[in-house]
Length: 148
Image 1 (cartoon, helix red, strand yellow):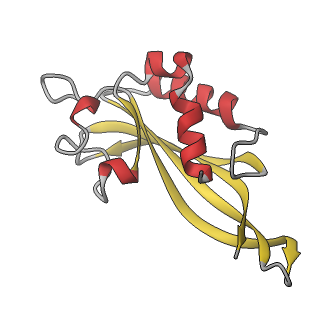
Image 2: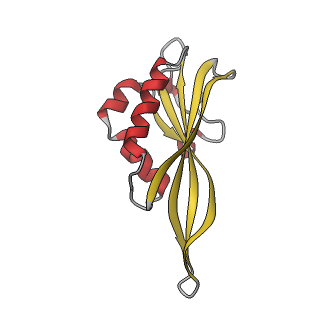
């Protein structure tokens, strides 16, 4: 199980988060390269086509960090960046609630396929003009490994 799928499973298992994220939790495998949209993720929208509070998870990169290394075993620790996008129709009240809960669920924890998860920053108070929605992003640094 990849760190991204483990993180997604942890978030989807939390009733407190799901109570606010009524539009669901998605990753790019489900949404396609366009992300949240009315065609591929219709449950993220209400009957009038307005986006409900929801999350999108995206794996940005995997970079060797040089902390753990075994050349003969072809083993290398890497740092992956997981982006968590928070959406809602207007304002940031639900986004703040979801962002806070995700921090509680991920910060300084471990999941299958990862050694450690650490918050790495936020991009706040943005607008997704394609969806006409409020959006914010939290980044998490996840220490994983690569082996043969």
